[in-house]
Length: 141
Image 1 (spheres, rainbow, N blue to C red):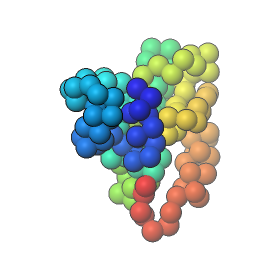
Image 2: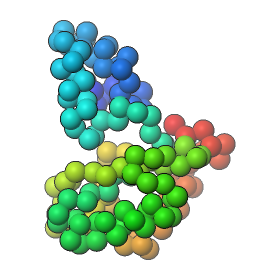
Image 3: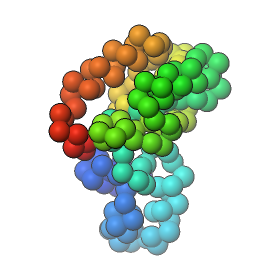
């Protein structure tokens, strides 16, 4: 799992070629690497935008507004789950439990930055902050 995380960090996503390389490096059948990469939602097996927004919609977050937050992001960004904005900056994903149920609803940005107690206002501020960091040429990652 660590090898896949490092590869994704360096390449932006886990392509079939990356899975093959990891399998060869770890001396294991490629199908084992593919099974891990496709089972866990932290690995991206398709290219994603510069900012991957994973919204938890598991029960505690759903009961605390996770689905409302996801719907708000869909409307604001003009995309659905597993889609990327035309400028390549944002990909929206439905995430599994992130272990912060007491802070629900939660979202994680690029598998590293946890956002808690999401409200429309917090989401607006987050998107504005991320857009300010995004390239202006629409290059995405």
